[in-house]
Image (cartoon, rainbow, N blue to C red; front, side, top):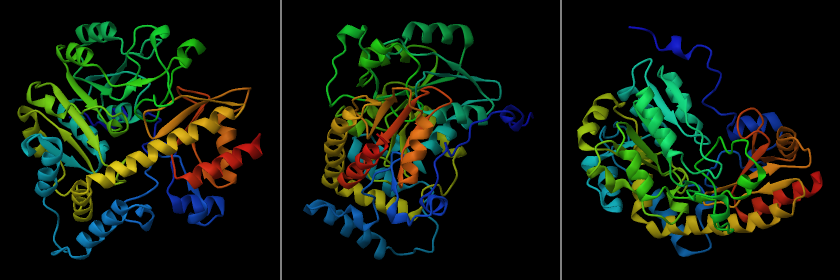
Length: 408
């Protein structure tokens, strides 16, 4: 058997994506962890097991009590967790309306992405990626010895379905990864309507180098039913990543897996409840093979208890989402006033900004880091010359804008 590390040799990406933990940053910056505003990893600033989650309304406090109460009274804490996460999957079934037989949980959606590739791909196989998108698709494909066929989006950021179909026919790839929310699906730049409530794609790699007209037309929409059905008709496994679905107001396609044997839908608790718990909806014909390959204790006892507590308090999750959406709109307005930033409206929990007036994205990130504010920058891959500003608490917005005014 050919060692997969042979295919990995020479691949330069690192899974850390340049993001450091809070204590590493504390040492590097010479600041106390509590004096660092960490906005570089799309993390929920309200947390899940910390006292920050207590909002000035009842439901945050209730969630705090539920989680700590559940963990504090948990029996058999010395026993390994249920390998099948039955309690969590039952709660997810109640929440989604999809039977638990179709659901598999993992340590974040990232684990499930890798698990899918390990089960589906052999070294030398191919996947389709539609940049700009989540960098972990390419990362995991390379780890598993697969080639990545990139089908860039159209100038209006819609999926190029005709090109996808051609690549599938000619190259015979095993699977394609799609994100929803995603870029606008409208067919012309002039048709795209931008409002402060419209937004960005899934996470991380950002925009390709496109004409300003197309960039200014950028908006996020859910992949339409028609487009998704057209792709599902192709002889390829479709993995639909819905990591930011809560911020879009759209309905999940989890139930679609009952009618489509070539569809997988991924979700996560990371963006709302700040739990490293992901889950996916899989066709029954496929999920049995993933059960055989997954790690037996991949969801910890504490993570399962906290996730179940979150699902038992949906009003708390709704309040978290509403708080982040309100702050996203508040953050967008002052960012527009910064002379060297061109922010794009967002349906996510972050705002992408183009750096203008000859400024350098990496230099901006470093200048903010010196003042204790961490953001994400892009200076090597697409979208070179952009920064990503995740939504924090109101005080985080205030501190960020104060630092930006100093830099101006």
